[in-house]
Image (cartoon, rainbow, N blue to C red; front, side):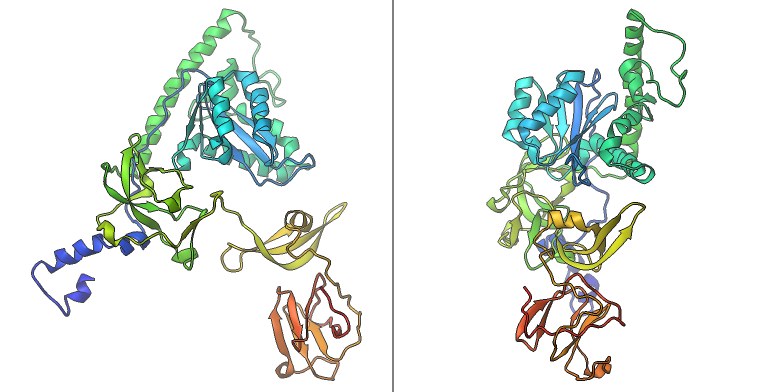
Length: 485
């Protein structure tokens, strides 16, 4: 701005005044991306004193549904030994069912934890879960809003679990549910770089036996106080190794971060670009704002978190944020843009929905055939379409395009006064009396491939479904005597 203005105007201190104006421009603060290092030095949770006293947990959802109906995994991780449990479940489980599963698979094996770190999933923030853990004597520690790094232990474990599930899906038959017990065993019996030992070795004093080598555990038998002492020594070694690894990780992370502090009463902008539940009407996708505000800081919560005074329009959002989601605002509060155009999904979740079925095909396997459909999604950019199982799409979205549609065979002919030609790329309509393919100049394209509604001289509205044909496979059809739904 300064370089452009100095060609026409000049006054004493002009460059300083222009810089002062730009850094206080609310619009610039809302839309411009930051090129500095992210704010906030790495803050680590304290190292636990014993195994399974402090745990983290999260859910892996939207998995392929198994024959038993499972479509999610509950991941529970011990923060000291890094050992984990992978519990299959259904997303429709009630909180009462989840509490019983927690007692049966975690408390039964390891006792009641002292604390649980988790994200702000609706199940973890529910009144039932909070009161349930309070009665057990467990402290629930929830992450700040839109900062999944708080529960980084669960996120990293889930990343490894996803890789193991994909490997089993490629190498073995059956559903993922069948492989989950052995996946959990393989994960817990594997070497972990942070503790420099296998996870089971910390829990039981030695690695568990595997089919790989039957004598790998060794000839020596440990019994009595000897194994107790060895286990205690291993726990102490693990805590020292964890401290070394965490110090190394913190030094790496802090090199790429910048420290910043705000005071109570400061005005800050709030980052909204990662929020899948926030929509700005009229400005979608890349044109949506990166920041909203300014908002006043009402309290400091810990070294790198602050509580904001949010308006009623953002009442469904937790008001404590990590410093990396904040941006200092020097503008006059009177110049702030109101939030009348911001709407929040009550569930604060991102739901992808299909909008059209573009194509169908059959995938032939050894003993069966699977119907696939090419799906165009609502929030995918451009032509990012995916092939999905037709049965699953029909089950999840029965109202989309899976109603009873007419199917036209290759040679089917219905009495006609006009000609409809179905090709691989488009639907063409011609009033020519010649049954052969007319010249392109006499063909009127009614709709591109994938749209399902066409009008015959604006008299009827009908649907072309299921059957799509190559350029040489034309059928002659009329809809003057039959009205398709």
